[in-house]
Amino acid sequence: MIEVRNIAKGFGKVQAVKDISLSAQDGRITALLGPNGAGKSTTLRILSTMIAPDSGTAVIDGVDVVADPMSVRKSIGVLPHNSGLYGRLTGIENITYFGKLQGLEPSQLAERVESLTEQLKMGDFADRRTAGFSQGQKIKVALARALVHNPRHVILDEPTNGLDVMATRALREIIDNLKESGKCILFSSHIMQEVDALCDDVVVIGDGEIRFNGTISQLREHAGTENLEDAFVQLAGAGEDGE
Image (cartoon, rainbow, N blue to C red; front, side, top):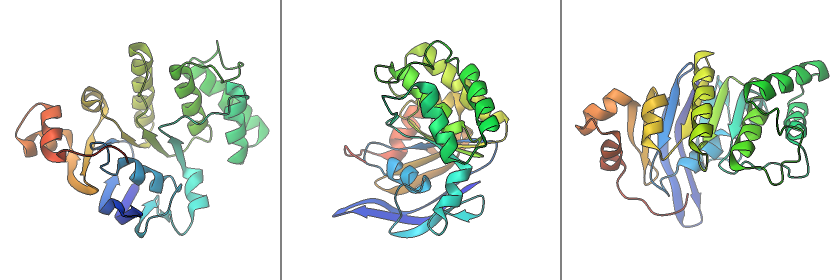
């Protein structure tokens, strides 16, 4: 379970996040929605222990992300907006490197790499250097890297951005399977169809503040419309570029 407790974060004169609290449950998929500049990526970076909040905190499986970030990193798998692969390494080498950072034993690591390569259908390109990979291939390797240590919590920042239809469908199936295995999944997206098809719960952020936190059906009821995009626009309001 992920719990965010009154976090705030500013960058110079810009207050990216203002007193945000939310939760994401195990065995459920929670979408973090908001216009550009709403504070989504900042929130995800705090949860990923990449940056620290100015105030407040977050707790993942009872571990405070500020007080004990190293322990938190063992229980989370993160797919950033930019895949951040090492271009001179092959797909398998990228995944293996992160498995070693997580302290996996050689035999366990080899088993996980083989399993993920098969599950994500990477056999045709896993042994190639990642420089020059298509966006879909990069996402698959980055996702395998995030899952190599079998984390209980998965954080995805716009995972289908730039993917074609087939790659998007495959990724949605993977995310759904992670949910069925009992994992806690939190991801951001701008695609309402994707949110409607996948998610159990929705958190809407606007101007660094929570505008809604509940289920998909509650969101429609709260906004008074069956159209999820209309509901989102009504609640989130206009935002500015940048996060």
